[in-house]
Image 1 (tube, rainbow, N blue to C red):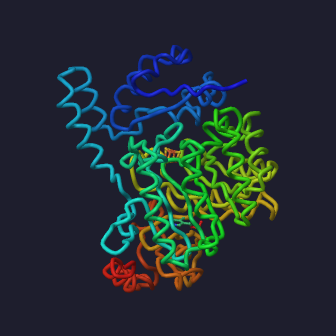
Image 2 (tube, helix red, strand yellow):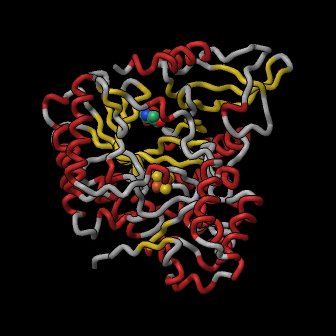
Length: 441
Ligand SMILES: *Cc1c(COP(=O)(O)O)cnc(C)c1O
Ligand code: SF4
């Protein structure tokens, strides 16, 4: 039977039958917070994932619906007041805009990663690490449902024309012809799997030609397996998607689905199991990743379960991320020490097969920085860190040290250990940032 997607946002979520079970207070919180942090969910999440009997603490509800604590108290009170007064759209919009801007909508210097093709700035591409480009197809800049911790929505756009896609793709192909060092292209968003099969194919098919022999892996970052597994089962073009995946493998390239799963429940339904099975039958690989989030998955047992279930289903655990410094981070963030403790306690419970996962990792301006642990050396307590990916690949895998800080939740709060003034890479990083535009010409 065909499952039809029904999408819910602030404008129509009251049509969800289960909403009747929420308290007045929770509804008000959705109305107030949902104006600042836009939310979107769907019938699969509502009917098959959320536990409505325990909605006060349910992690999937928290991932999909705004809660009061996601906004600063002062922001909450300001919006609540305007909402009650109903003083007009203009005043409300202005306030909302102001709050959003204060929430760091574009974290970690992403603007530094946008390359040039001659004079043209390639807005749909980020090229930070030599071997991999990120590609943001314009039709993939939305998602089946929004995660409340995510602040990618400044880039969520409404563009919907095949023609525009072709032009954009053309620039990407030109760029790739000039950059033979690139072996991986990672389609990302939003969620590229919201695109229909023919648009996705228009981006991918040209990459299978011999002139792109240097591209070995095509990766697709997606939350669709968790939030809309019917994408691979009963959507109008599900079969076309599956055929496209087969075609990539038949052309001798690796297809890796980078699937975002934050909680074991997302792996528990028949639909997700069938979808994973069907994708794997195309010989595509599925790698999994998620941020570590307070109130969602901040228990080692949950991660151990998550990795085991993934391996049971034939997926490869890949990254555990530290939540980014943006949006409602404060509600979801954990001290780095705690992140490491959770990782370590989960990692030691599982067999080597699950230990393909790496983390906790921070996507910082300089690169992906992993917390290797906490140690005491000659009386000084320190964080041991390393680059999993560096803006300069030379930095990768060299252990380095930061002063222990029990409260730090992100790399930029850390100071070098042992009285050093700068981390070993900082001088070069400043130089790199200054010359970046040159680098990519
Ligand atoms: C994570 C990331 C990649 C891919 O890194 P892998 O370690 O190869 O998965 C590429 N570009 C950017 C900007 C990234 O953040
Ligand atoms: S699916 Fe990914 S891009 Fe979309 S809202 Fe969630 S974290 Fe953000």
